[in-house]
Length: 524
Image (cartoon, rainbow, N blue to C red; front, top):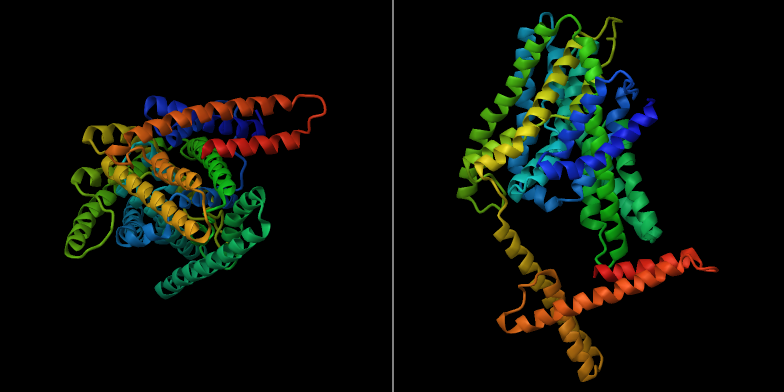
């Protein structure tokens, strides 16, 4: 098997793991990691030959962009305090605790190298957290916090990692320089992200065509990441800023085709890239086995100790942090979405899985220092990091569904149902207001006016069947029947047009254009 065949296997596994995971109640990323581990121990499977410094630039931008499309800036702003406590403060605390323990138990490990280890295992993986949480039907407030933590903690961890590695390589470190680099990295990233977001938004209007616009959304995350890194900023934060800007300002309510096609396209990208990323994590077992050759007992002990620190520090931090946030939330009228019980706090604790970023940072450790000597304890750091990733991702990922079920933590479906109903009512009212405006501007026949009134009412009912009052049940039943018959009519039309595609003299491009029109009508 060569590298290309291995990539194909991972892509196929990414697709198959979704229905298999749904069937057995297991997260798809965890299944892909297990697949990678199985492939890693097979003799005919080659070692992954991807330069470590390319793993993050290749995998992270599309994954971050896809994740940000499911949220909004207002949601981040509303949850800024819990996200800050998890994505910034907890990453700092975890880095320091891991560094202290590693420096104490690994003989001869310098403090700068120990800090690099702490930084690369500190951030829970944004992809793992959102993918796992999204499949388990968790309360939206928990998913929002996990998404926010996952998206922003890499920013903190990667900057800390670069500072620690620079100190280990050069042999010098000052707190002032580290703080300046941290602030400068954030400022540059935000500036680059906003500039590219604004430019991409203007270019979207110029392109016009849905296919070209979606193609631009593929390029923009990579451009944002690379440009920010070139200017010594945080590539992760730049991608987040760009994606949030486009989510807020790059959406045209009437651009139906781009929205439908873009949603489908990015769902596919998210599934495939996530699968490949977690498959690569499992495949890195090759490196771990080679590193620990002849020293299994000692190195497994170190890895177990760091796993315990990572897991226990998160629990020790979450309990008081959640309590403090609740107290502040009770005193002021905040719209933050916070855990409401100890059960939800436990689920947040057990959702702290490490993944893609930790693997990439571990493999990206330089081979030598400025003096020409080897990077201190590089093999040991990589093995410990891999142990943390495997323990948290596989163990926690496999047991999280059981824990969620055991504790009875579920999404508030009634609240979501009420929100959907209220949005349906607002949509129908907006349509009726616009109809009244049209009636004042144009003279509509009575029959047409009544028909448009029914259509305005149907907008809300299509979104949520319970929108109408009791007296309109018959209208809803009639609408349901009309929709069924209309669907059958459109189906017959699609079959006829599709059959024409194989007829002599038929122009496939024209047939596909008509078929696409019917497809869009079918979705309305």
